[in-house]
Length: 478
Image 1 (cartoon, rainbow, N blue to C red):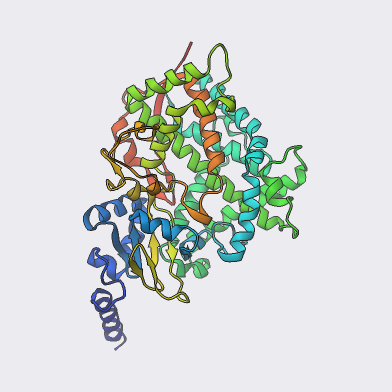
Image 2: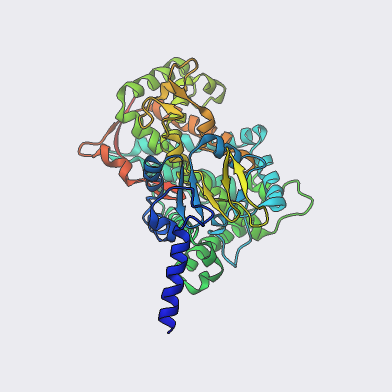
């Protein structure tokens, strides 16, 4: 009797979700997606969600039903309204990295709680604050170049970018202590912990109702809990070490100007967010940009020529006062962010049940609907970037370019609105410093036998993009 009841219930739910009476019936999409989240969960587990969304939009258009109560949108007008002020709050998928043992972070909270945390992060990422961080960026960038010069034969540039980014964010968030560049390895497995944490978060983000029951799933729950405990340990050690003499990121997160001082646990959680959000993302973009340039020698040659014209007679390529002259390198960074955004799919936004239906760009979004605005698919939409939407063409970003369509309102590599990436100015400063000193110091080539054409197939979307090895050889430039 129970089997018959459950089968009848499941069938009736499936028929309703497929019927013209469902609130999302007007949105096209594969029939299985309308019935269950299994397909989204499967693609999240495999890291292919960004490709899956792109494929669906190629078939069904700018609005696709990706789940029973979920839509993916790559209409720039709607995306802008959804992400900007007056749009939609973050959905429950952003709670996926939480565990009952840890406090909420800027990634998981909304409303007044988000505004309070954002205020702290905004102070930590002002132009004045970033200038305080520049000596640490320059130090680590020069150390990266020095360690690369020590290597012989071929090397994995992705691995070295990872070590650089983790060392730098360890410096800023917890006063240092990793020293992975010096060792030439991630001996404590910090990077692998981040990837395990992000994969667990990406998967649970598709079934957020499971978050309160993670203790029943030892592998996923333990992965998230252990990573948060790792952050607690870093915070405790940072407090023991005392002041560093500079106003680093920890200063703003833990001992800044708030009337109510944050707890150690809260500061630790925010410090871990900084490491996750700013290390893997930066390393991802740096790796992709090198791959694009080595795959397109004519653009690589133009980058080197620009650097040689800006930095002459022993000029320091880390001199940020000259970086505004690096117009073509900046265009290459933008084009890399367009084609390989470090957060390829983003999390969902939610039409809250208390709000009623919302209308964006003339389309109705019923209450309870989760909404994806995936950067990877949006950035390759020929409605906004044409011609060659899937090709690396940095000239489209140059002043006065004559491309048929170059709609920067559809560029959301750092998201938009009140929840946009607070560290985007820092990220751009960091990338220009690293790339300037790297390309000024070395000439790079793909290693013999390395299948460069297959490299993008090893990019996986676990909220933040992960990459496979990038085997290169280096030759000192004179």
